[in-house]
Length: 261
Image (cartoon, rainbow, N blue to C red):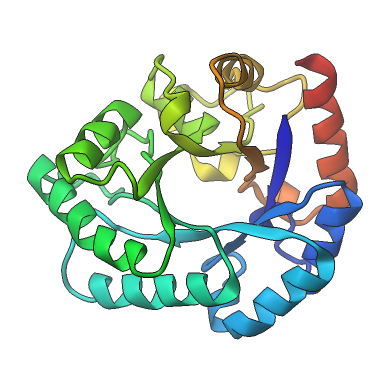
């Protein structure tokens, strides 16, 4: 398997140090973000591209456009700005997350957003990574529905799925779609007191033997079914972000996964 590293795994590291840490870990594929940390407001895209070139890493995605499935207000302009940035910094893909506040979004609106976004992505040579969120309040919870919408939008050549092991578990989805999957996010939950329905991003840590999300079976199922893309660490928990040695923590998690697969 190939590991990748999302900047949220070590958000306190400045961009050059984050890229260097990835390479020190033997990782050559990275993800940058527009939230934690917000590189898009802090770095010019050409400088990000230059730093990635110096470090010898590939930017697999910018994370994330939200809420991509509610096409209106300032979203089209934000989508174009983010896509422009992605193309200029050398990113391969743009992560797209659905509305996640309990509001239902009609299927036709989802399809319409995918159609509109397709032109933006295609003209810039980017892939759209559609990431269903498994939270009970999410407007797009399953990969099966995402695929149905992509097909209805004629977006087979533009879109791939982002399989997130946390959201896969929360949604109760059992089917895997390796041929549709362009990227996998991995993180664990170890808190024994929180129910699945109550799990939040703040519970997501690096993988170890206490993981409750069945990450290892998910990873094995994807690999056995033919998925050959990267598995990117995406922990949100404060204790991970505040770790004194974030590179060492990721290294330990990589060893755990590799040893136990």
